Image (tube, rainbow, N blue to C red; front, side, top):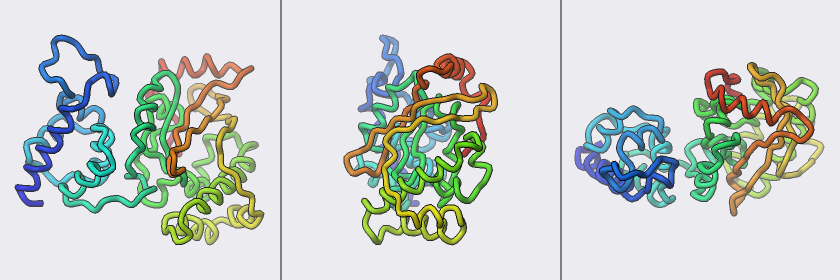
Length: 285
């Protein structure tokens, strides 16, 4: 990437940082703040980067940012879709196709997620690719940020990696499989028939999973709007929760949040989860 592009990238990051009020992203706003917007260390924290690395980006130096880092910066700085695309072009990276792990998170979804500080919540795509999680979701479900390519989809991992199912009691596996397949059929139908991401996922699962192929042949179709789940947490044990969904206007993204199931001790367990944080979490699913 040319030095001029690096300089322009740094200037753009500074301009976007300056416009965000700290309270918009959960930071306190006090009289001792020297800047009206976010500080560099705050952007680095939101994006999961080191302060030194982010400082280098704003100075127009350092190495070319990865696509994963650009997606994190776009979310941290609350960029619009056009601004996100511009950021990728400045960094010399291809603009991601919709629906993948680097998808631009719907701004309304992200704002709501940031306000859900006392309950596990995350934003996923319609193909069950996790885009962003709050700390309690990481503590409850595991950190999903490390998955790449096709494995970023939970549906892909559910039918191809047996360890993924450890989060659920074995007695619930059959029901979860049925729900995943019916939801995938609904999501794929709402997309373009030639959508490569959905088509590739379905073709892979039909070729590699006899269970998926059998369920796909049943032709059940139903979006997963709400659900009651039993989750195996390796520290807390069995946690029973309600999983609620809020869909974006185009249906490509969903905000999921988890509340304790009535009539169980899950409310106390989720309170304890907030105390434990991510010190003891389940393995990535």
